[in-house]
Amino acid sequence: MDATGKIAVLAEEDVASLFLLSGVKDSFVIKDEEEARRLLLELSRKEDYKLIIVTNRIAERLEETIAELSMRQVFPLIVAIPERRGPTARRVEPLRRLIRRAVGFDIRIR
Amino acid sequence: MALQVTRMELLRLRRRRDLAQRAKDLLEEKRTILVMELLRLLGEAQRIGDELDKRLSIAYEAWTLARTMVGEKALHILSVDSKGRFELQTSTRSVAGTQVPMIKLLETKNFKEVLSYDLVTTPPELDMAVSQLEEALKLMVEEAEVEATIKSLATKLESLKRRVNALEHIILPKIESNIKFIQDHLEEMDRESFFRLKRIKSRLEKRRAATSAMGSGGPS
Image (tube, rainbow over all chains, first blue to last red; front, side, top):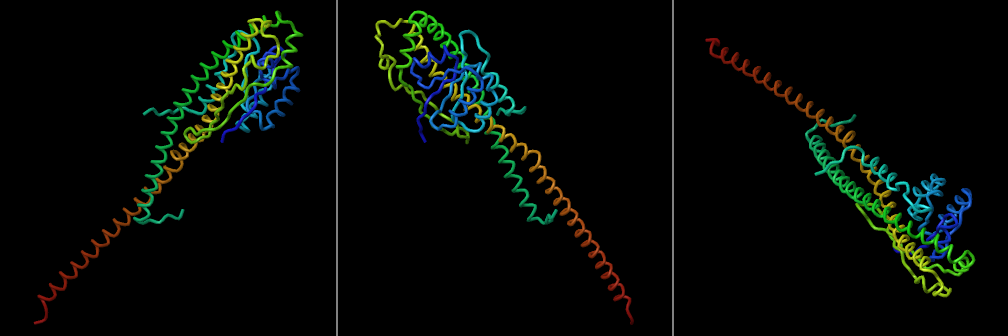
């Protein structure tokens, strides 16, 4: 069940332009939250976008929309990246919490 | 509660209990496997995330330099000209009974190929920015796959937990109490019939003793 797909990027101007130059054609400059949300929903509806990259700042403001989309379908995958250099918020923490919740408190190790 | 108090029913219940117990053991094994896989994936996510941040840092820094050197207008021309040269290949695979996404980055053209600008004039910072971003892009794809896998497996783990709990706290205890109920009643029935037999036996013996006594001391 192989399929091909496209990448889209929603980012601030300097990041989007880098992606654009590097060969990711569908890189969109985001100026406000509403536009970002509308675009994200529109791209998610299209079948051919399998990966959407957003910057952390956008991801924070669209947290609920992204969470809802992730629950609804597997694709498109949505991943958040830092928008400037330097240490970033730990991306692993929400995953760790998710796992801890799913594991519960009895883990049998044989 | 229409429960037949028969040995047949007892046998049936015992068999059901064994099945339920086996099912529970199997589910718990699956849970253990899933937990180990999830922990492993968590480590992967951490590793990929760190590497990704590093690459992006370098890419961003190089990009900032490149922009000052090349100038906005030239960059704009470059960007507009640039064609899409990345594609994704997606599929799914099965892990412990769940469908989990697989995604791979394909580079359909080289950066140099799509650049219509004169290569000699592009600064090394630009090349650096683009090549680092390429590496970062691969890592983004990996990270997306790992994150999505973790989410799918975590959901599966929760459903396994619910099923194990249902077996442990509802189904098995119910079967056990039914077994006990039947056992107790069968025991009681056995005891009753045992004593009934004893009574009948003793009555018979008394009658036999009485008739033989009468027989020996009968009319002459």
